Length: 102
Image (cartoon, rainbow, N blue to C red; front, side):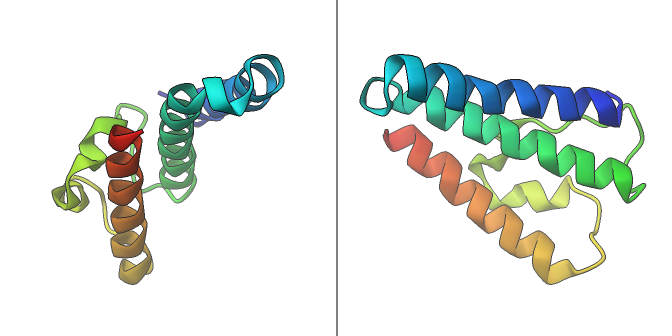
């Protein structure tokens, strides 16, 4: 996907959370929807970052399911700050684990 496509996908997931899940349905009834859309939105933002930094080409695809394991860091290109990559992956894996509990 192109960077613009990732950005549009992020905006769609964000709108799903704020416009539909929170305003129309309410948070109490939309926890899974919020969790899933937040997970996918984060992946889209990471994709935008990787494209902007020219760390991936247009054919590279991230999958939010990869983040169920810390081993996802092996699939990602190195960031300028390696500590950021490790911290980001840990938080995203934790997020996926929590989403599974909800």
